[in-house]
Image (cartoon, rainbow, N blue to C red):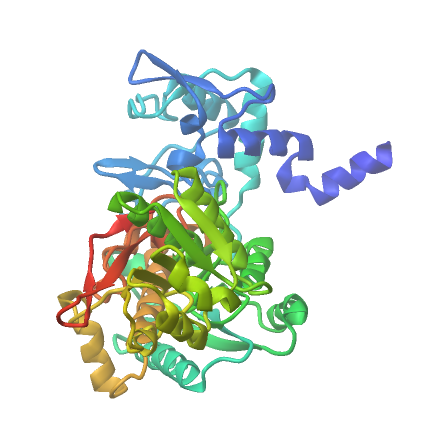
Length: 523
């Protein structure tokens, strides 16, 4: 028993105690007390509330770096800032602290307990009325404070005094032209970013307090290309080897298939993996904080959008969904069938070998496949009705809709269509200046947006290098960049991990024989 306690003290010395910190972490992350019930608190002086919204993470965030909403600035709760008697620099005393909060009196355990229970700051002033006054017992208070004290500011892998290492991933066999364009964009952008044209490296050594927050945090960003080869069952081991050889702060962009393997690796390592150029992410809904960030939710989003569109047509009584056995996305086709049945539509899932009998079946056909030849066959055999395809599965759908068909083509797509939006003019100007013409405009827009967003978030962290804070900075920046991705509608709330959560249904115009865009349909 003594040996176990001795090991606990050694291994978990800054965690205080495993039991305490784990209970405290649950209160912080979920608002659930030791008895399994949600915490109760008083807000705005006299309003008693309880529930998950009272979890500390809602305002102070997973990183404990705090947040800001309008004029309300939520201070950080990191141990160094809050309780360690930190010596404040001149810049911090003048209210430009790197973490966005003004100078304060250092907290002790007792002062922090008072702040949690009574809403009184260390210097005796009243905290903002938005700060709940929690009803916790002494054991729960001790657990919560133990967790806060365990969260030291640790420099993550991939960061040193001069550089931040990032990686991009090529997963399996990919189009060489796509790979070339993606890497060229990232390398060119970082070459410009790292040019040190303002002599940031030297200024960091002799900077005035007014610019200390920027120059002291300046780092060059180095890109590593991780290539995954062979069967995807070996990719987790390959990723582990690559990470051990070159630890990185984050994975940015990427290209390839079976990306769920990369997502799982990133979640396990607590490694941000943001905005790959994957055809579909197959993201499962997750609760709480996640390290994987995608442009769109792939097929699950398109399933919901297609179901809503068919429901809103009002006269759709039957739908035939085609997807062959053995295809990795047949389960997606099955979900479409189930969702349509749930709203009273006679939906049937069949194989493409039955396409020749479509003339005798209902007029609405969903061809849920990546096989363009199979879709062309369906187009030739279909009734005078409607044929729906997925832009996630068939990215170059123009090659399909050129096939003569007595039906009307429809494409479910989250992407822009038509002339270049004004929001993308800056990006295409950059391409023309540094790269010439790009073969894949959508991929190029998304890659440039991803690397610019990542480097912007790195700057926004200032010297507070934290992977969680990196993702929280991105949440605030997605719709503020002057360079935009290939999506009309993007947003990202706390813990949301897809930028675009809807799609258009593009329909073939009978006169012009061109696709026209319908209204945006949110998931």
